Length: 107
Image (cartoon, rainbow, N blue to C red):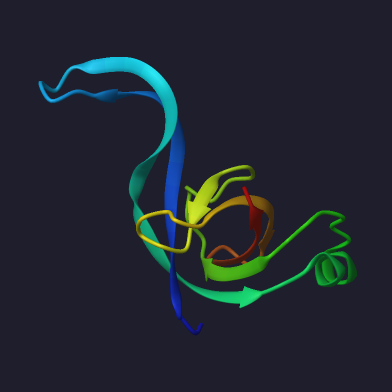
């Protein structure tokens, strides 16, 4: 598999650790949940997703990667370390027990 990018995983949390290390409830924000995996990112579209998989929703990229337990429908991911561009996993196509194709769209 050609790895030209990284897929970073995030989750929504309601609060934060303050300067003293204590949890404070607050506004919902995204927090990293354990790094990244290498992937092959390719532009994709609704028309291609519908033709290939019968998926009738908006898609901006398809990502080929090794299977990972953090890959779940609805999960928030990014292709940049600072999550400047956030995406949501819309469809997962498992190829075998090791590889999958993930269809993502803008959040």
